[in-house]
Amino acid sequence: MPSINYQKLGQFFSENKLWDTPFREFDETDIERLAEAVADAVEDFGACWEPPCIYGGKLHIPWNAPKKYRWWQGGQTIMATLEELGAEEEVKAKYRHHEGVKKND
Image (cartoon, rainbow, N blue to C red; front, top):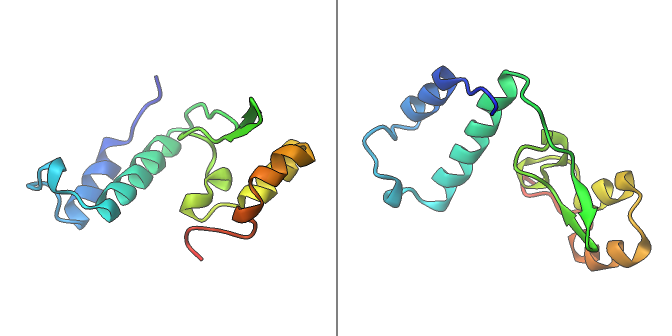
């Protein structure tokens, strides 16, 4: 199990004034920022990362993949990841509508 930098997580909660907020009251943005903060806190300790892979014709990007692959957090595009993994054209075709899409664009 990876180590977590709890000090960094505490800093996130303090900066965002979330200490007294029940989780059920978190909005989508709070949840996304919390997920990113957790990933960053784990990353600080150099935990083991799972690489993305293509399985059953679908791209799988684990939550703990390096930030480079997390397109939803400003990482490279899905198409760039597919290219890097050597995906077949049939797989790439499923993701063409994501071409050039980055969440933070």
